[in-house]
Amino acid sequence: KARGDCRHPGRLLAGARWLRASGSRHQAIEKLVALLNTLDRWIDETPPVDQPSRFGNKAYRTWYAKLDEEAENLVATVVPTHLAAAVPEVAVYLKESVGNSTRIDYGTGHEAAFAAFLCCLCKIGVLRVDDQIAIVFKVFNRYLEVMRKLQKTYRMEPAGSQGVWGLDDFQFLPFIWGSSQLIDHPYLEPRHFVDEKAVNENHKDYMFLECILFITEMKTGPFAEHSNQLWNISAVPSWSKVNQGLIRMYKAECLEKFPVIQHFKFGSLLPIHPVTSG
Image 1 (cartoon, rainbow, N blue to C red):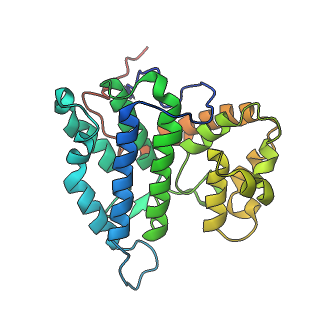
Image 2: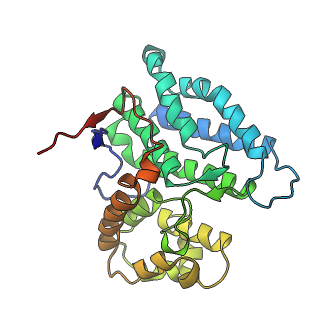
């Protein structure tokens, strides 16, 4: 048994109530968005190839090879020169965050790697605690957009999907942060996220609803059938209860599941320590 270490005030599951992103003057935020814009542009430059299989388009491997080659250079655009020694380690988490090039799949373990990438940037001082709102609603949101484009363009398989019994085929964290964003909303309640009209009118402003919209675009049939867990969650009376439940679920279904965490990389920035018995 062992435990990982990510002790930073802006850590993964910070219990703060998230608000809509305000503009950040911090240059690192803009540089990270620019990095993600580059990944997006590479998708446009690497169109899917014709192949017999409908899923897992092999052009993804060409796209990934470009990232594998350029990852350290990309990270170096965000990290100041006096912290350059950290670049190779931080770049590993970026490469781990976009899916697996052998299986051409993507799942919550890859998403966790991007959270670790952001956590590392916090630990070395590139990102600041007071940037946490922009980290989620600017950087992580842009990451989500790029991952959705990857998933759609190359028809990526869900990694370790639980099918109808899972929360979502690909993501988990945006549901946690998105539900936090909706706490104490004057009129949007959990029951509204299964209302097509409410989602269409509000998805651009709320991360949770954007996730729901993407699911409805990618899946056919009744929502209660293809996304049963979310359908059940829509009956929870308040967003704070939804948020608390999702955090517990994330710890149990992602962070404490060996098939997910076995692929997680540990190093000097995010070390792993044996658990003492007793």
